[in-house]
Length: 238
Image (tube, rainbow, N blue to C red):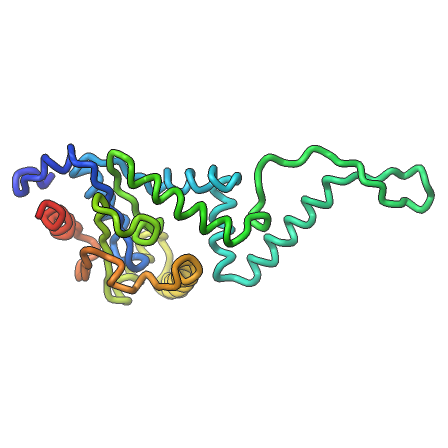
């Protein structure tokens, strides 16, 4: 650990929330995991996703598909069609008549909401609500869940943006997903576009806006997190 080089024991007692954002495949996930371990604060990234799902009355997959609809017309259409089919299945048909007239026979509705049944306004309200609730927690590390948007302007939250050159991000993507460089390049472009669309929809901004972060890290070595973890902890300690 970094315990011998940095006196950060007070951070373990301090109710601090650290959000790690920035660009896709710039090393933020690995850096965030290390920070979480070093200061003994839980990584709440997945928990925040589950909280949002519960707030919206859906599951994690429903949240992800709703978020993808912000950047994809095809996903929006698929979500809507699924909702229409599901809503239609709530009504049966009495076939006593040869005309098969539609006489509504209401069936039990599914408890879980489908992505197409969640409005944009409902999603955004829930997103900001869970961020506001998290600021009252005992502290956490949140990676890539828009904490710089729904937990901003709070005295106990520190926002970090991690950035890296595009060619190094492609290498990181290839390493993470075990794919070739060409596929990694295409995936990076896709994920970048989806993330930008998500930020624009929620807050009319982009993840590359460095004004969103208290500390900006320009990562020149995306496979060595030590110095960046040290830089984050030192900045918070000051």
